[in-house]
Image (cartoon, rainbow, N blue to C red; front, side):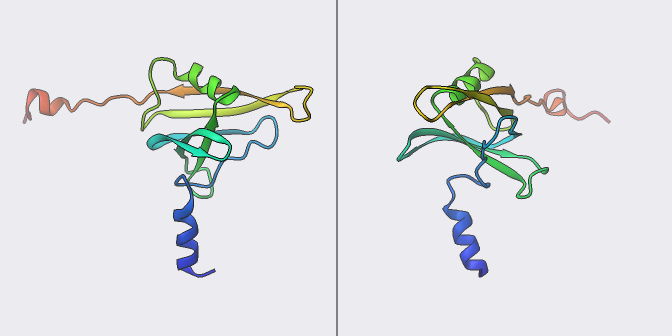
Length: 130
């Protein structure tokens, strides 16, 4: 494909990176939140879209779509009162499935969140010392 076509496709994504795929139990994504998490409405309902930078991924990161339900609850529990913020580190793991009796099992998740650490420029507070 041409560079223009590849650029168009890249810009057509809702996130900065390829979407995470939780296709089997044990799948885990982790990274530093880049940009502001946002809510996107699709044909499947609302989802929280979070870009996670991590140099271990081929494209330098992964985009996670978090829907209400088990994934949303896991992230909400992990975040607590902190709120998701740029610079925080989010890990989301697909831990297993539960039979619903309706054909499609319910995916179960665990999440861990480390809020960003605010930095203080001590020199600007106390002035430069020689």
